[in-house]
Length: 86
Image (cartoon, rainbow, N blue to C red; front, side):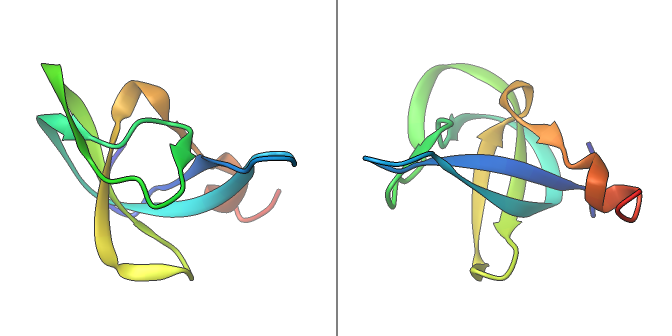
């Protein structure tokens, strides 16, 4: 994953199917502080016991000011957006 890639992040909704939001990758790094997926409410980054590769992202169209970090192995590229909807 690299700058400009789009990913889908699942957000937990109670009483209904989970929502999925599009995020844009703005960087990759290693850290032990990231948000677990599926995201619950306004969850913030938590400290974990191991340092892993994470992606720094912004949520497209919702809040593009805040940067969130997610564990790289938990996210997938959104191929539909990358390939222009083919």
